[in-house]
Length: 136
Image (cartoon, rainbow, N blue to C red; front, side):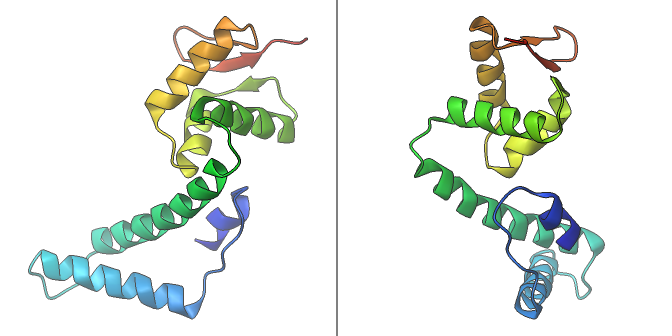
């Protein structure tokens, strides 16, 4: 969990004892929903996913305050990550991962890809949807 937070460009929240206790309680509640007396790995995985999505929703609210529409914000995320990695090529799977962390959907990503391809900002591989920035 801490490794994922360290790799993320989102503002950091710290994994504390309180966070771990919350994960335990959510996992226990999920097992009880299944009428089970034991907590399964899938319960813990779902608890971790719920905690992560809860944190990402906070970041999504902060990004909405910046005034950028979703398409422009997705473009900014992809551009910033490509710049950080010092590359002109971005794999579709990476872009989807980055924007999902910010609570955007795959449909919004595809809309962004189409819009900026039409503006000749980047080219999209028709088979893999990988992105290549056009050198200005």
